[in-house]
Length: 421
Image (cartoon, rainbow, N blue to C red; front, side):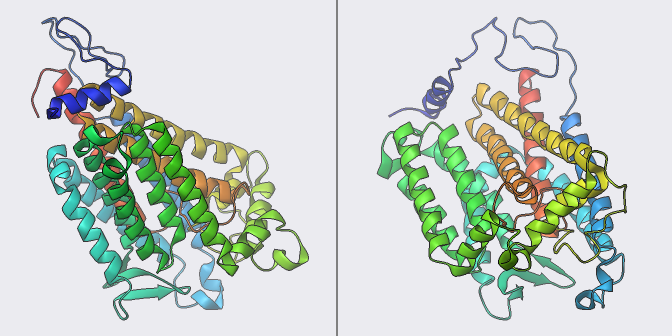
């Protein structure tokens, strides 16, 4: 039987990396400084990845401004007449404060503790997903039961499930690394866990969250070294499953038809309404936009402008330049977190590496779907733009996940400087 070190080395071999030998440079990089084990004093490094922090903060602050801009006119709609003009701004700012405190606490937790807690946290998320389906416990909004009331605030368990599935899948791949060539021993139990999550999410219903969770699990299986044939088999099963879900649901089929022809007389005022007004907003912004606060579509023309379609308001007010900047910042964040994950794996910290790369897959995929929907490249799906859209639960969990990645980076730096964690 292989030891834990042997299992870690098997993954390093799959990634084409070899363990550093005495006198060699570590196969990792810290900014522009390479650290060696030759006895030379290492260059003093930052305790955490400051560029990642500042880019994250920039996106959140920009999101706060855009949430205010996109929601300021909502009280003029009779449906939201009870709200003040700064209602969503205040609540979003409150969630940012709570998320910041949560992220600070998450950063204090060693990665070894997250690894030990992966399975209990996964079970907790299952219980919360069950609780949200209980009448008078779960709140119903727009016909979906996805939230649990917490006094003046609401919490969405599906957001926590994204993070706990990520931790569970990373821990699972480390434990099952010896069996990654055997389908039923390596993949089937993980698939069953994701399927249970999927059943609970579809009961809400929340197919968007299920898609994100499935992609997170698939990504970690792939990065963990699952046999390519198994990977493509699982991918095929998922594609067929989601296709059947769409085909068996009339309103999901209508969304696809509306996406294919949003400007038709039938769809323009029905299922294609959000998409057409999103495209009008982005088209109106042209290259440089109409200026902050100058959006017309947010004046109760574009539904969910402060949540799912925030990028459309950015496109109208900041133009193509603003949209490209948002895309570029998310691309940089994803690339940076993938790099932190590779550093951890090179240091034989497989769980930490898979978690960091799993967060990158999560943020990247969800941002890709949201942007694709806003730009008309993908069918309409209710997924928010990470770190920017209004939504307290999402902001809270997103920031906690990034704090865990920063902790992984901090522990990487400590090890590269000859310290202990």
